Image (tube, rainbow, N blue to C red; front, side):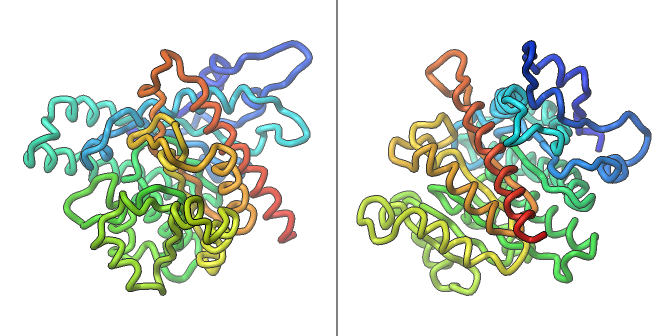
Amino acid sequence: MSHLVVCSKADISRETRTRKNETKVGENVQVLKNSDASLLELLSQSDAEYVLLGLPEDIGIRANGGRGGAYSAWKPALFSLLNVQSNCFGDGSNILVLGHINFDDLMLAADGINFKTEKGLGKAREFVEQIDERVFEVVKAIIQSGKEAIIIGGGHNNAFPNIKAAATGLHLNGVIKTKSINCINSDAHSDFREMEGRHSGNGFRYAFEQKFLNKYAMVGLHESYNAGNVLQYMMERPENFSLSFFEDIFIREKISFTEAVDKAIEYVKDNYCGIEIDMDTIQNIPSSAKTSSGISTIQARQYITRAASKLNTCYLHIAEAAPVLSHIKADNKTGKLIGYLVADYIKARTTFKNSKS
């Protein structure tokens, strides 16, 4: 775990803006204890239910021909979450802020690559394989400790190590017999491209081909931005893939957004499930593939809430937000939106768990 940068209480305090007669979530969150024990042991010692992890990288996106910037989501998202009010709707005491994975060495090396050449892309995709390894080990420990991971930042290349780690951690815990889980994703793109080397466009494909992903449900795919061969592959396998399209929901109005989300939930509810959302599915949010025609911020929150309140989830991943690409010098709204999504997830999970008790 040499690449894990652990958050301390001092780190949290520096980012939390306290105010007299009020309590902020940052005053209540947990951090790892100082110890020589393994990450798994330290996580197991905490009674927190949710572990917050940052992935400040964008190499996977650039290796897919996309715009960089997703490295910038973690810090503003954490700041926003720490500074929401602690009240009867949530006080933050069930959250452990683990920290972020350090990709500085890979990011620096990637800056020297020409991504427009085959040789450059090949090298970048080798770096993504190293990102996979770092993410896998940390997320696996979180899941194996019996907690849910809330993962912020990076490209959708990280869907592969997220799914692999969740399936492996649950299997090691004896929770599932087969090392395989389901996943639901709200995204303009399926990210199921060919296995041509690792990048943000094929994270789910690698997870599926390596049998860590069993069922994959997609909400709101854009018809014009998914390759024909990929769509054909998935449509021919209804036992593994469920697709709904943005145009059917919002343009032709064949199905409502709520119905599309519920259809996807019904499809994946027979197993543990990861929840993914690509911020490029939301209209006018700075991201690697910003869209002028997407779902609203409210619909994104509804998606997270409905999925987390009805599924036996093991992780949430909020991918590809890129505040640095905003035309505003200090883009606080993107971090604040991610904070909303995290809070919505935790509230919905509380609802789910209370319904089972």
